[in-house]
Length: 352
Image (tube, rainbow, N blue to C red; front, side, top):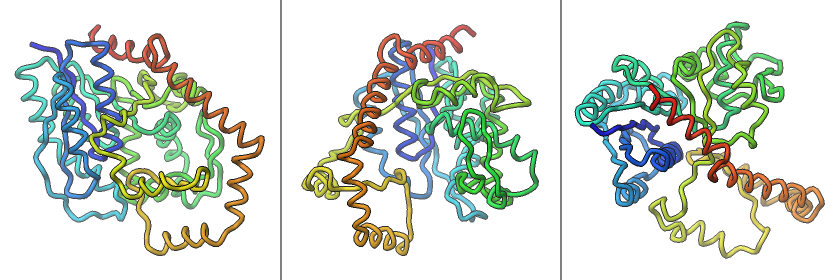
């Protein structure tokens, strides 16, 4: 039987690409490996992933995609989209179980790597005795907050939105409780329950891969590795492997064909301010109008942008960006920290 690993990403394009890039990177250390990727088809829009999947399928014979059956979601009890994603993957467990059993008939499944939205599948992996690793598409800082949430929960009966305090999460600067991510602000919301469950399940994994590199977040990486973020429990091995980014020719789309990018390319240099709220950032009409009015009417914005571009502070920021870019390239080069972590990850399941 061939050795195989199973990747179980969340269906959002940003989560999918990062995990597939991890699979491709693993093949550089373990060329005989077969990579099986479970694809979920949600009953809601997550952006087009087909072009990317088709491109990877056509160029990587060792990577195969297994599409899970489409399921229907019950009415949500939370207005937050994250709740739908967790519920989707909970209902997917029988299909994940069947997929792993089917793959095991022709391959020796050495491990499963799952997105944190796919946490419900941890029980499936345990039932089938398959080592389970979590893959965190966000930062190590995000992981530290995940790890520390149960400790915060035990030490207050209030929701974070009602706390007028700073949270002292190991490895991070003080964070006002009300500034934490929206899904965990209200402990009575279903979304909070879902994220809290992730926090309690992370320590049960065989290890956690984070799409980052050590020099980008040295303080928080050390805090996690030293066990400070899980004061009363186990911290699984941490593997900082990143940045995992698909090259332009691997995304499967012609970026130049998008009207918005064509418009952007025609603008004068240093004349556009970018507001980025993630690949699925959604805003109401009123919010969009407020943002537009703010930028159209505020000459102060133009002044500050110009100052940043032309000032010593701006030059310092750009120099720091160039340094971090070089550090990222060094981390992913042979002998770099991410490559070393990759080798340690492969060894963690092959030695067993």
